[in-house]
Image (cartoon, rainbow, N blue to C red; front, top):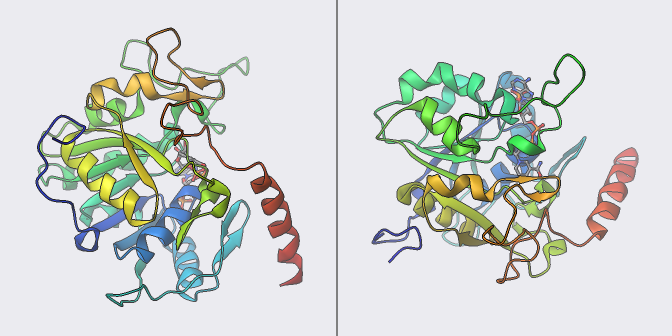
Length: 289
Ligand SMILES: NC(=O)c1ccc[n+]([C@@H]2O[C@H](COP(=O)([O-])OP(=O)(O)OC[C@H]3O[C@@H](n4cnc5c(N)ncnc54)[C@H](OP(=O)(O)O)[C@@H]3O)[C@@H](O)[C@H]2O)c1
């Protein structure tokens, strides 16, 4: 029995998956694109400006990595171990995400539905898998109210979870949705596996519809992390949302706080604090390249 409560017969072969990241040019998008391409998936980095995505893809395919701003993908081989194959990685416009099997929601939460909505008519009825990375309560670029106050990212009358927000608006019974990777710092994801600064905390929390969870589980394992599946489907997602203060849900029945889960796998953007030193050194090194 799969932890999501359903029978899943066989592990998904990730090499059969086409994956589009929407948008794939940000911190999570670039690091995950490289890791998933290295794991054999057919990956498309989608952007409002294809030239921006193309520049990133060209740099990654050169094997030199990609390091700019806060994005720091180290140099890497672009051939995968046996069965040997080159990376399948390409740039695309936002609209081209509609053709993929798996769509990864990797824009800031407050613009995500605005980005996805125009594509929805072409995607509905096609059994798409959605992986929702968006953290509504960690959204530093979210719009403010007239007095500079933080606006609630999701109307209070609705379930307080991004995967439910997007799934409800997408409104397609053939699609399958999951929430994943919320607490994983982008810099921990390297093309050939976890950044050594992860230490033992290799867990990636996920939850959602069984088909999406099965696919995402395989995608997480494929780049060396450990899926930690929370039971209960998308309905339990509000319990697992996080803010700067940890889990949003508090109280004795709340799920274990990130960082103190009994498995010792999940951290709150967990890593050795030395990752901050790595970031400073990398930024300094750019001046000498
Ligand atoms: N950073 C993390 O460690 C982390 C961890 C877990 C989850 N998350 C979640 O993952 C998502 C991506 O995070 P990130 O840090 O990678 O984001 P990011 O770098 O700030 O932005 C990702 C991409 O979103 C697009 N975008 C930005 N502003 C936009 C706007 N106003 N309208 C339309 N598109 C816009 C841009 O793509 P184009 O310009 O190419 O269109 C940008 O490259 C967020 O929802 C975040 O909460 C982040």
